[in-house]
Structures are given as C-alpha cells and as structure tokens.
Image 1 (cartoon, rainbow, N blue to C red):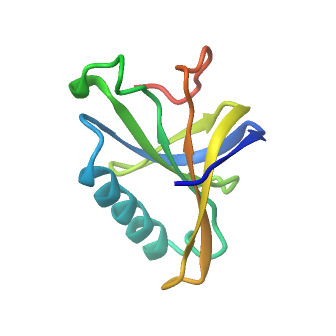
Image 2: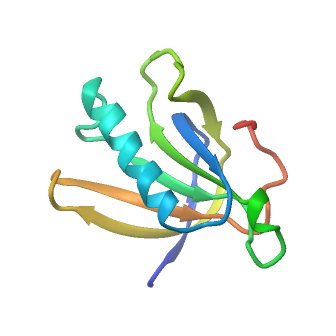
Length: 122
C-alpha cells in the first residue's frame, strides 16, 4: 500500500468510533458512515477519513481506536450515531483512493505515534 506524508490542517468533523482490534469491522463502520451521510445529503463531494489512532504493535487490540470522520463545517447536530469533533492538525500518512461507485475521492489517514493533542474524545 503506497502512502504519502501530508501536513493536514485542523478540521471540524462528524465521526463514528469503534474500539477493538483493527479489521473488517473498520470497513463496516466506513460503510455505516457513508450510509448515514448519504441519507442526510452530506456525502456528495465530501471528504471522509478513516483514522487509526493507535499503533497495534504497542496497544492491546481491545483498546485500539478507529474513527470514520466526515469533514463538515455544516452545523449538523450530533445524534445517537455520530459525534462532533475536530481532527488535530499535523503530519499524517495518507492513502488516496477513489470510491468509483459514488464518484468521490476519499482519504485514509494513519497517524503514529499517538497524537499529543486530541479534540476527538472517547
């Protein structure tokens, strides 16, 4: 998997979180966020991040945090499915991919080591 290091600005997001070993459940959470956003008209021309906050080499699997974040400056309220937060600015390893079925482009971001400052809280 090819990636590049990018400096990303702090960004307001709506997000869903799962805690547990990284795996297929992360893809399921991404699909759930896309469906949620699409039903509310927020998916078109959007940026979605998948962020693995913890390094599985030094974090127990049951404590690994994965967020799917929809960048949104729209004042959309949090609900039982999503929370509001901000992705801290900083350097990220970024993997670009195209979601051909939706005609959009997304970004998967992995950030190691653990961020010193987080505004998305558990």
